[in-house]
Length: 183
Image (cartoon, rainbow, N blue to C red; front, side):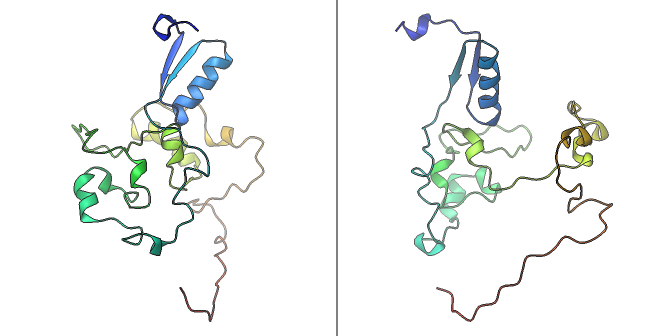
């Protein structure tokens, strides 16, 4: 194997999260020689999710945050995600300080996969309103597609909770009652 410093690459991708991982995939599939750089540790699925099955009572502060955490993470404390359940996934505000000219809420984790592993189980369904936001607000770059384009071939309902043209309410979750005491 040749010395890594003597290698020549067509592209260098920094970070293996959603954007970097996809960029590396697309470039290599087009035949480019790509160097993918990652600064964090590798996360093995299941094995490294050590807190996934813990109950709140398994944590010293019931999975919440403390004043000490808020002092150590002055930027991350703005977000709901700061807690003892996932503190080891975030980059330290002390060791990797943020430089903000204007407040910008973006939080870093240094591990293979980046923010794709820290998405908070929220996946919003976009509407035509969202695809047109950049043009409407006069900022950024317009999306190259529209909502109707993104829906081709999909068979799900066009209604979303925020749709103004929705005809009926979405069904609520079933009510569950139990006479068993909580542990």
